[in-house]
Length: 88
Image (cartoon, rainbow, N blue to C red; front, side):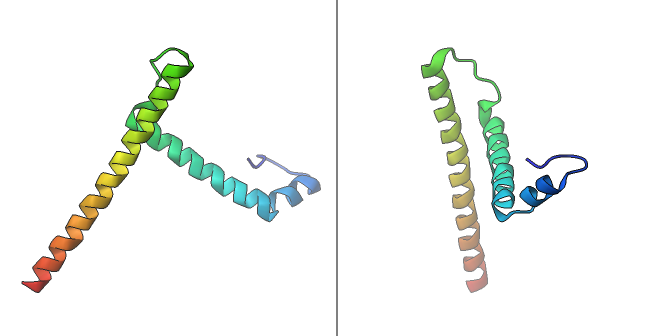
């Protein structure tokens, strides 16, 4: 993450490099994914132990993927109905 406040010359050069910028953009994508998983039930892990944690995470990822798949199917159905309306 970039440093807040006044930066010295070395920090300024590091933060303006292409690698740093790519990593900074990836960080925001990861934060977005974390927020999506929290929205689908992974804000608190009530299970105990590593096995329960892995199961809980897997179910959260599955829920998020199902939600995404549902959105794709709804969009496909919407486009298909628009085609039928235009043809009629």
